[in-house]
Length: 407
Image (cartoon, rainbow, N blue to C red; front, side, top):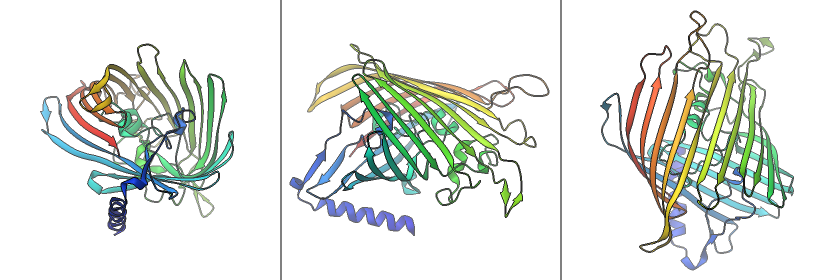
């Protein structure tokens, strides 16, 4: 019923907007000077303003086709309306802003509030944020909009090792400082946390994304101890942006009604991210690498790893930039993504051999952008995955094609 009510409300809003005189609609220009760090990605989006109303709206959609096979076995052609996301922002008063991000996935079967926060600007180096926040671990978790990427799939390390679009209810502070060619920023948050699903799941491995299935994580913390997330980023106009982030806390329910059930078990995540556009040739590089440590009980089997690591690197090279048909600033790009994830870093106790459960992937791509807000992308994936005990790896290959655009 809640989903039906939400959809009807959105349909009503869309109908109302359609009846407004187009003259009253205006595009809200993006702040290309201030919004230069990954931490600003939540506001670095195209919005549509309505006359003098204090509310602006926007969003994006992703539609994909793919045909993949694993060791020669394929499910054939598949079409997917992967997601539609709606943004609503408002300047409540001087120095007070609100922004929300509502995502529809799997044709509306899954509806989630990814971001809904109130920002109170105090001074550039100290601003308050409260609500449902995107925990700033790495760069992709905050800067994940489909139209910004040349690939139909999100990075494996950011979806299957780290929880993609991981958000929680919480409070925190953030700030930025500028000095000539340098810019630095930080974010510090206390928020909702992970739970026992990290190691108590049907995947047969340690999985941080499994905690996203907890419907109560926006209302209650399983351990009663907040999750801490902190990030520091530094950008130079020539050398790009480097980010260092940490997220950690107690995930298990270690006591109930004053009765000790277990010791406090922690999860710790460390991440590095980097992005830059090389001068003269305009090659864009973005990379992220993360390490995960989980205090797994000794009673669990060795398939539940206490250490994980993985990351990705994207290289995007524009090869054509000119007017194409009626698009003044169209571009054609060549790109490639390199990925590696090890879900269980370590050796078997009995044999001393390396534990498997790892994969690598290469995904070359070609994309066409009629404008910066819209991308057509064709990818070819080659993925090799090794199981827990190191049997001969499985090989996945195939094409995917997609269209993603802001609106």
